[in-house]
Image 1 (cartoon, rainbow, N blue to C red):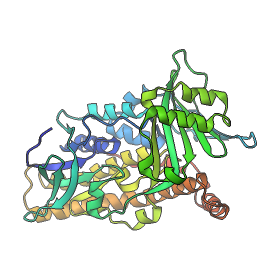
Image 2 (cartoon, rainbow, N blue to C red):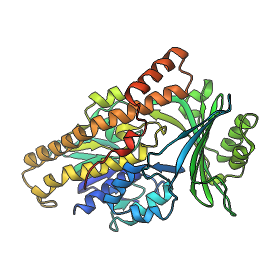
Image 3 (cartoon, helix red, strand yellow):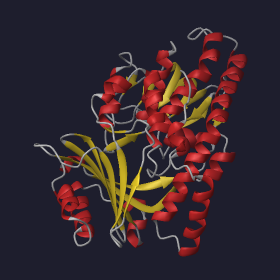
Image 4 (tube, rainbow, N blue to C red):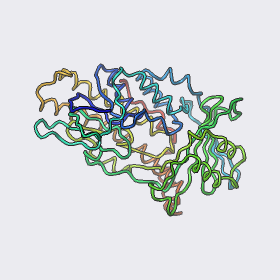
Length: 407
């Protein structure tokens, strides 16, 4: 897609969950934005996504929750099974709503709720600079053209060019990799509405029902040697599935092995798990001029408490709520008084970052500790992690009761 040099009001870089949710939140507040997505189609990869009670509150604010509830059954509880001793541990969801959505359903629903023309596909931003005359951010696109925007929100994931511009440090990899996929049961499965994790010596298999005929699964395993290089992660679904089956065949129950063997090949993918250290979130500046970041570009975290996607949706609500007064005051599309507008937008983004910071520090700390416990971190470090978990997160589902507030 060819795009000439142009000027925009609000440019959102990245058409994933957070980017689309941010555009929809601004739309609900009465403001237009443009989402720049580098792919030629909306990215629906990534398998399933668990949305807990806090995420459903945010989706209700966006006006899409009722439609999404029709696509996924509520989860009634969770259970951990330890193969080395045969013990099982039931985990309560605390009465809060929890469902596993297909990521593609969430992406499609958000996109269909936006005005036509909001999303531009095949539009890859490769850098951000400040215009020498206006000090507004300028996006350099892959096709050589530029977009000058008054406001830029980076929702472009772990390799964010917007985060690079602000000066956010790169995220770090866990020594863990995760394989994900879906399995269809034409005659229905008999797993119930329960999230089950089976924990072996080196691998953990998780199983979440989406509805009566569809199950989302993941396999988390340690990475060593050549696998420790994220660039060596295979992209071939068949190779990924065969490697995964070989690694679990002797240790795990046959129903788990069969579930992965019968999975939809096109749904199988592998990703190296990454995180942003909580101490960086505590001190990092996430705003530069009228530019900020959200979602994984700001706070990528492991999947261990099921909050990565929901946290990005919360970001969208808070950004729109914080930014709306500044946009309204400056008569959007007719902004004048550049310096005053830049100050007010900057203050709005500072408000957004301040509101989100401690919430994200706590989420990131909990996922960071759980990630260290899953990887080969050494007995002493694991002991320290257990002490910190017991001290800071004795209520392990407290994060699901959070309310990001009204839009």
